[in-house]
Length: 256
Ligand SMILES: Nc1ncnc2c1ncn2[C@@H]1O[C@H](COP(=O)(O)OP(=O)(O)OP(=O)(O)O)[C@@H](O)[C@H]1O
Image (cartoon, rainbow, N blue to C red; front, side):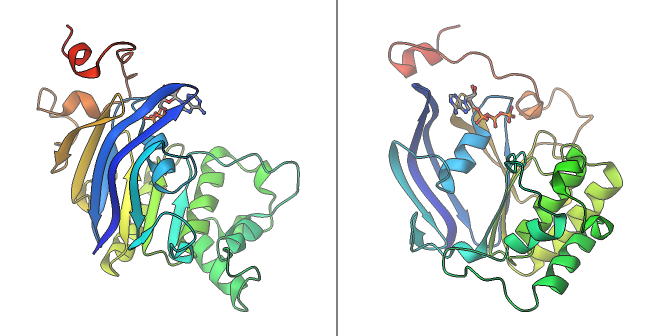
């Protein structure tokens, strides 16, 4: 079975086409890296796949069910790129992680919530921050709390949007180890990255977006330091050049 099955997905934001006809089938247990320049549509695509932003056309299935209430959301973990403003409500790191155990059909956290949340924080090296307000944590610390919130669900599908931005290298390695263990249990992982970096040993497949379209789908590009190899320029955080804005796409894509 495919953990994600998307066909012909188009997303429009602010009147602009951002995702332009993406087909993506991710088999259960695969670890897929989604790469592309800034603005190429990576975040928008994963948000559409999870129903966070609407798609204007195409079909999406997650864990075998059409996007909607039939999806087993309790088994889907999502780490957004940034922590949404908590609206001034004081929330501790532990409370944020406990919230990861809630979903539409379980509005009360399980009895063992505290040890489970603490174990998840500990796996990311931030157990000592459990009682701190997340608003007062650094960006990297907040990011680790968000990852812990996604892991505590024991997801079958885990989607991470640039999870290691603002996280130091030793912690990135610890996180990659945690992900390896998840992969060994058959979890499907989709991770948006700028650089494959320490993730290299984990990645089974890479998909590169450009102007909201898939321009590469296959083995991961070579690691850093191999400049000049095919695919190299797509994996760096340069801005995606302005896409063609009018007329039939095909013609304009070919305009020099
Ligand atoms: N809510 C929105 N309204 C209008 N345009 C948007 C909105 N959100 C994103 N965009 C535009 O969509 C394009 C793709 O953005 P997206 O965040 O998906 O790219 P990305 O590949 O994830 O980039 P980055 O690597 O910088 O995170 C950008 O040009 C962005 O300005």
